[in-house]
Length: 276
Image 1: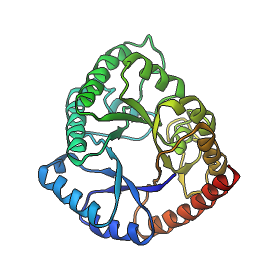
Image 2: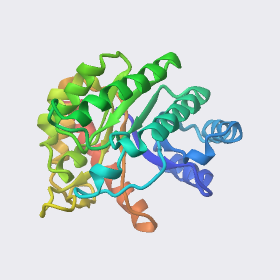
Image 3: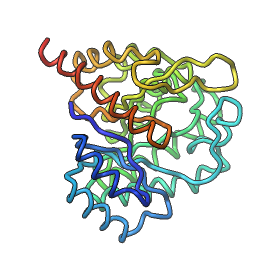
């Protein structure tokens, strides 16, 4: 189970890759903004990742427009669920899939938005054909689309997978998001969703404390995920992909927290390997 990091393709990308190499972080999920999905960017990324021996496990599928990460405006602004933004964002995610194919990256992961839990909701009925179109397009490129967890219950995610009915639709599993959105215990969720999980974030966080705002992300080990039990469960369900650290702050403290997380995760993984 190799460790990774969520990276941005930005002005300090090469410096970040060098830092990852120095700190023995061999994989990443790479976020590239819509305006940088160009042949020139693909060439630059390919050269730099080869230079620093970085393996990209997934491209983060970005989309444009408003995005408010809360319970009030979130359902109206996030992902491809809101009808007002669906068409343009599907085209943007298709562009991400083409970029992933150019780079030779097998997976694209992205938040789809607040998918309605009620299967009889008209918004759900409209969403599924659009989702099927996007997933089928990715399939023609040999790319898998992984839904980032957060806004949906595990049951809703299973329903989407069943209703879209495509073998290239999976899940990018973020244990902290399940807590921060108040949707599920991540250990229970990974047992249910394991057959469809192709990427896993290593992130910690807490349940919400009010009805309008998400719970808070926390440094690894300070939230409610119970990372030791979560990783033990990953081994039990046979997950063999990367464990990608995500720490959604910036600056020097972010790097300190990443290195603390790396040590904690390596200690847990070593313990599980020896136990097995």
